Every structure is written in C-alpha cells, then in structure tokens.
Length: 122
Image 1 (cartoon, rainbow, N blue to C red):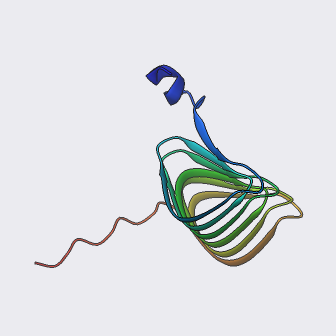
Image 2 (image 1 turned 30 degrees about the horizontal axis):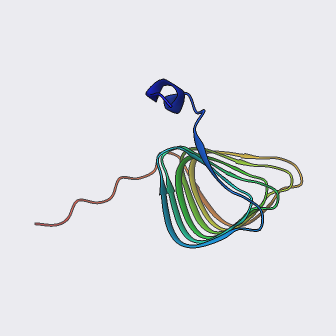
C-alpha cells in the first residue's frame, strides 16, 4: 500500500481470538487485539483491545480503546477510551481519559502531558 493509505489509518495489525503472543511487539501502525498478549506492546498508532482481547504487561501507544482487559501499565500519549465492557487493572498514564459508564478501572491514573525523561547527570 502507498504511504497515503498507511498515514490515513487504513493499515493495521491484528491478533485474532484464540491467538497468544508472549514477548515484545513493536508496531508502526494501529494494532487490534482480540487474543492474548503477555509482555510489551510499543505502537506508534492506536491500540484497540477488543471484547475478547487481553493484555498482561506494558503498552505504550498514541491512542487506545479498551473493550477487553488491560492488566499492567498503559501509557497513551494522547487519548485513552475505556468502553463500558472494558477493564483496566494497573497504572494509566495519558493526556486524556474517557471512561464510559459500566467500565471497570482499578489502579492509578496520571493525566496531562507525559513527562520527558530526566537528562542524565554529567
């Protein structure tokens, strides 16, 4: 596909129901999870955890929509949408958080601009 289609969000990765990945995943485009990930997901785009999807570990992404289970730490540089069927257990760092009625959130939340890492001492 051309860069125009990739930039418009038409390209994405998917982990289907019944599939499991253990380890580290790096993705330059959107990622939809309907299976299980145990480990770390670094995504430059949007992460969607479907109703059957589960992540146990760490997620770093631009945006996220959670309809399934997120168990661990998630850092969204822009917006996190926690849908009514979604469950988050752990730590959330995001600029904007949207929580629908019925969603479950058990953990900590830090909102605002993510802090830049401290410069190493010389």
